[in-house]
Image (cartoon, rainbow, N blue to C red):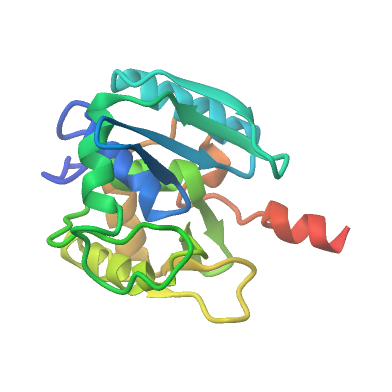
Length: 214
């Protein structure tokens, strides 16, 4: 299918380290080492996500390793790097806007503008089809970020809302044919192995929910 590439889509420009901010929109964490370097990590539900994300890191010049987190789930983590320090400065509490009464230590930066490339990282780390739309997972330890992330989607033509308290996991939900088409235009086609987690695929039970009911 021919698609017009949006100015904001993941395909509109080359990959850059700034794209990795999309991981902080969900449950990714960035840790500073004094004022000299920072490390970015994200724990994911499925192994395929970890391996694809590791490739995405490397495409941006940031080598990353796949390992097992303390919780037993796959984890992607960089070493401490000088070039990740600007990301830490922006996303850690100092210099951020919005509530910071949470356990994650991060908040959405003042003036944050979401891009298609960031959205693609977000989808790869924590996106999945829902029963009525597409779900982008958010960090349960950073509830003060959730509404601001919904606001950041609106200028991209992807109006969304937060899932209710009965949801399996907290997420930003995108519904409606036009909005889902706009989302797909922004994030581009799925990399091999990610097709089942992309907009338009059949919804699957969340691994966390499946485990709890086993």
